[in-house]
Length: 388
Ligand code: NAD
Image 1: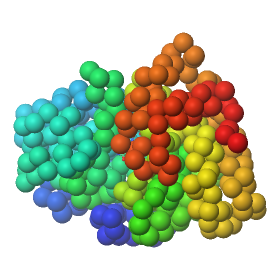
Image 2 (image 1 turned 180 degrees about the horizontal axis):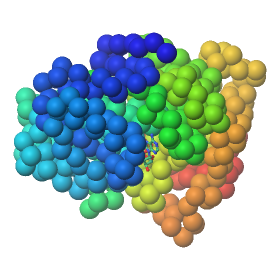
Image 3 (image 1 turned 120 degrees about the vertical axis):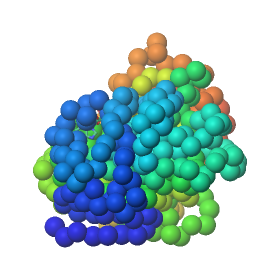
């Protein structure tokens, strides 16, 4: 496989074994002492060991923060930023799935701030309150193919006091160099490959269906969905297929590039169950997808038919697309009902619906939404009944 350097939406070093260039990436950004941010599981993995040895062999002295948890927390960011400053680091290598990437990006940001993290929630122009000059440079290395955090300008962090997953935004969250190396995703188990791949689909799909004028995002989203249609199943069934792994990494980065146009109710419904029920984000997006599509039908039917055409689906109708999603989920072993993952007694629908309505993704939904709409979508996803 060839090596590629893309400069859009940031510098992206793409191809098999590009991780071997990580010391050069540090050099390019004048990072002499990076904080390497990852999670506990990955910290013990061969891919982390190999990456650290590339850095050591090139005399880059690295500090390690590896306490990142799934659905990562404000504590992760505060601890990491303190550790960064105590050790006089001068850049961050965020290495892992969306959880590690989001924390790494937020550490780079918070290492230079005096205001608390939550003051930078993605509402209005909050981000302009930040001190921008000293935000540390970030190298992002995704090891899952889903969130696209590596090409995004936000992190999703759980506030443990409020129980809410907040989106924290600043333009400088966008990493300066991204390494997309398919070899790093070969160890990803089928279940996580499937759930994260559906996360990438949710990003591309919601971005495409979000209202507003953004033909660049629309073009990227369509091609992202095509890559997923062509390669997700193969990546799950045959995890050692490097071409499938590369295409899924690319589709994931495209999803988050496209969703600067907006997201929608799939994400609004997901963030609360990720926070309160600790459900994996990609999995919850996959579960909610057909309920939200059918709920939004009147507003998105024509766009959905355009997607069918671009993906060259056999049945190029709204129902054909819904069936494609349902079939794909079935082949990926993704449950149809939320009740397969969350017990009724742990399901606080009133609180969840309120949180979903307040989620920043709600503004991008093609149909204007009320709390009652959120409730209905949650109810349908629990019973498994699509909207007619
Ligand atoms: P994750 O980062 O939580 O990782 C899931 C599991 O996969 C972990 O146990 C991890 O150790 C393991 N893993 C990662 N790479 C592996 C590999 N190569 N081999 C074996 N195991 C591996 O999951 P995720 O889905 O990548 O990220 C989810 C998080 O990202 C959520 O918190 C979500 O809210 C956030 N997110 C952020 C954005 C954004 O724009 N910033 C977008 C979507 C989602």
